[in-house]
Image 1: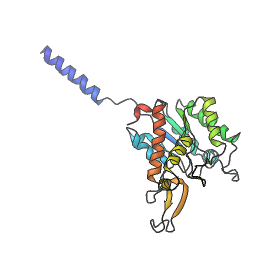
Image 2 (image 1 turned 45 degrees about the vertical axis):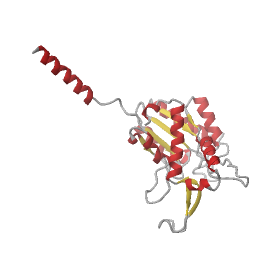
Image 3 (image 1 turned 90 degrees about the vertical axis):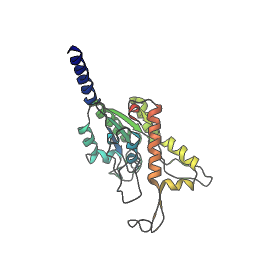
Image 4 (image 1 turned 30 degrees about the vertical axis):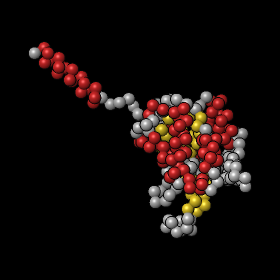
Length: 247
């Protein structure tokens, strides 16, 4: 009888262990612009944030709040940033990628100064994420496809990537170096071949864009997936706390 009770007790403990929930799964919030954002599925355009979940054990970890056309300023002014902050739990992560629209200094609703307002907004993001015991991660903006006549890819983001690098260094925040990584990738691919990663769409292929499109900023699925892969590679190489959750 004692042996039977011992077996039953051991079995109960084993079943309890199996049924016990795993450690809390962290969530990854994405704050950024159109190169990261979710897109309608009836068009070929994709943000790299849409592709990120496939690299994690639980795709639902990724909560993409990035939005077309937004800068750090408009993301704050429209309440999009506050929505993220209000939902953050301890142990969560926030990947922050801006620059494309902060560069539009002629637009008072979006433009920021890379020496003042842009880094100030980034520091606010960092401060408010840390206040919720969550972890901020900065990312430089993905490169545009702009080759010169000699076939050399040209940087297009001005002083904004350096501003992000400086804030990451001073605030001791992990940095995903997407500008340099995507420039190296596109340079290796070459001018003409790299079109397949972007919204270079032939006329008549999609009803919603009957005239086609020639867009060197926004990605199709292959391009978005590659950018997400480059981001994941850096998460793994830097041995960030998110790395154990990668497939």
